[in-house]
Amino acid sequence: MTPERLQQIQELFHAVQEGSAEQRAALLARADPDLRCEVESLLARQSENLLLDRPAVDPSTELVETEFSIPAAGSPSRLLASSSPPVSSAKRARLRR
Image (cartoon, rainbow, N blue to C red):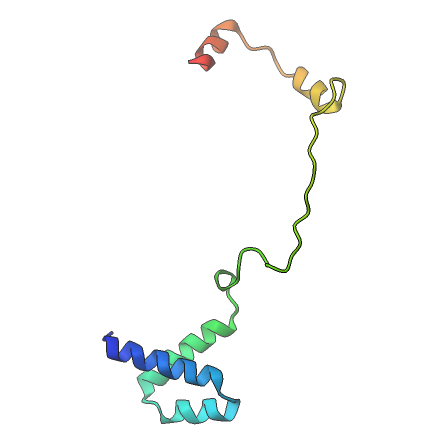
């Protein structure tokens, strides 16, 4: 695609976006078939509202801070950790390397 053709597509795309439905139809009717097809394709993609077109985090969303605490000595998570099978001294030595 030539830079000139890309410029034509961009200009028509932006003009169509800014116009009313009637202006959109008139602008697209005047364009050559290939140009119209390219712009209609871009418009269709835009209207699909693809996931990648949206920000990952909505800027108006308030982020909530949470505090994490270390479990107490007798808590269930500590008990689960202590019920794991013992590790041999040879395996511990390999893990340290």
